[in-house]
Amino acid sequence: MTPELVLSILPLFYLLSSSFAQEQNESITTSATTESFHPWSYAPICTEHFEALGGPLCVYTNATFANGRGISIFTTPSISESFAAQLPFHDDNVLAEHGINDPRGEEARPWYVTDLPGKGKGVLAKHELHRGDRIKAYTPYILVYMEGELTVDEREKWVKIGISQLPEASREHFFSLATIWNEEGYEVQDVIKANGFEMQVGGVMHIAVFPETSRLNHACGPNAQYFLEPGLLTHFVHASRDIAPDEEITVSYAPPLRFHETRQRYLKDHFHFTCDCSRCQSGEASDHALHQIDALQSSLGNWTPESTASVKKAEELIRLYKQQGLEGFLDTAYGYAALTYNAVGSVRGAKKYAKLAAQSAALKFGPSHKDVAVWKELEKNPQGHVSWMRRKANRL
Ligand SMILES: *[C@@H]1O[C@H](CO)[C@@H](O)[C@H](O)[C@H]1NC(C)=O
Ligand SMILES: *[C@@H]1O[C@H](CO)[C@@H](O)[C@H](O)[C@H]1NC(C)=O
Image (cartoon, rainbow, N blue to C red; front, side, top):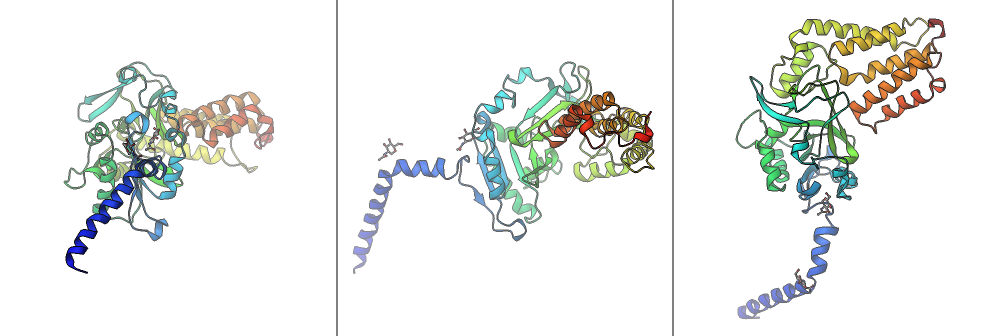
């Protein structure tokens, strides 16, 4: 075989194979872009296999998700499948039908963003809002599996791919958000760190960025409460008490039932700021209230004959939650009240507080959470509940 011959064979083979591909082009493009990756716009790109995670982590992007808003997810193949199974990936109208992502335009939003002296940007109410009113409902731009396998430098490469695959408008919006480190080379993780919400997806903690929601500032006694509805991939924010026009809307970034020092440390470690909301300013008084709350809850949760539980204590518990600005967490206090009334045979009290507990649980966890069903069941049938007349001796 002469060298010339080899040279002439190669291009011929090349030509043959490309004309073969052309003939097949329809079936190749359909199988590559819709069948094999659906609902993802690109072939997922994956890390190496991690023993601790039982597989790799991959970047999944649907660039047209939610009418062109886009979504990127950095997670395991099996969790990505549970995402892909959710309704918003199959029904293009379901998000708009639920009023998610501003289907009536930005004008219809009940909030606006403004500069607040000494606080950077904040979100204010456009008009009066009542407890239970919806404030925001948005899908995330990016969701990231929280792992300890990758170095910060490695992780940046992966999350950067996720952001780069989003549509331009979403990418720009993402990079316009607040940052903490301002260090070159970590731009994507910086935005995620400063704006992310931690949430369980497929039993694993992920961190998600909902750009419209991340401008909400922190308060330890917030006037709004949020939850994630996994089936809609949506982060909802509702008013947890009445809010006046032009009042700032806040959520709690830290567990609000922890003591002052623990909350302060958490906010410093995670968000790099010193809390100066009213409960932080009066740290001692708020700790005193938490001790009272704790003592009341221990007493109301004690079902032995020695228990000192009483409906008076349950009413006091509710009062303390409200006094501390914890209306967004009232499901616990209302729940204790419902059980306490039921335990002394007060159907009226049990029904009243079970209903309020169900509403509060829906505000805090979402309407499909199991707690909502539990309280609704108690409201429907107090006599059928295990707590019915459990404290006959304490009867009023
Ligand atoms: C190949 O794709 C082009 C453009 O998408 C299309 O017009 C053409 O009919 C396809 N050819 C075959 C053989 O399917
Ligand atoms: C992306 O999600 C939308 C739903 O928002 C869906 O209609 C579309 O088919 C998905 N894209 C791909 C490439 O599968």
